Image 1 (spheres, rainbow, N blue to C red):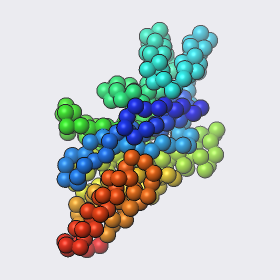
Image 2 (tube, one colour):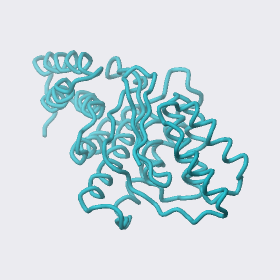
Image 3 (tube, rainbow, N blue to C red):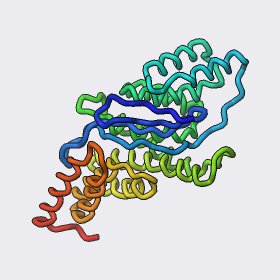
Image 4 (spheres, rainbow, N blue to C red):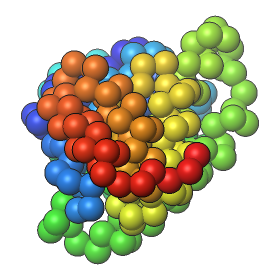
Length: 287
């Protein structure tokens, strides 16, 4: 089942594909200004393949099963309505065997409505029930560091959570068995998209901590394995390369970002020009 939300955030649309509560989604926001400052929220691409899935436990009753199907049928174009429907379901069936997929859907709807606190609340509840739900782990790993702002309370704690979720998704995803309803190609693509989000999230955690050398391999992996690389990750890779004086690599990464249509283009073009100027006047680091 494909679920898609339009987000009111600066960069445009977000899509999450959910089957029994597992999905791959991307958070969105504005562009970073300057390589030395802490970056504000970042835009992200729309994943377009089926996510990794988990089997759902059979329903307790026909009534509960019907209520869950009604919740699934609520349009995902209206995240507020989706959240209201999910919360109503959980209130009526607080011990439902469908709690995990409902929490998963609420996680994505909360991202779509820019309610990051709710995203984290529902995501953590989902993970408590399904610790290997790598799709929820990955979306929180990417969303938390991208949504940080100057007034975010306790940003170090937020980054620590994002690091934890990233590493869990990176560790678990390669070990998951292929669901019987997925082709090998779809499964491989879903794993790669999940891992790309997790590596990209971890790379941004390191960028925000100004650990640029540690960010580079994470961001390189993110753009390498993603079937449709996220321009934000190319931009972040350029930032990390520039701050480690790998100017040629920075220029290449910024140019990759600038070649992709979207709100990151102007920032990436300007960053590429800045990296070229620094390459002409500063000594580059050895390869």
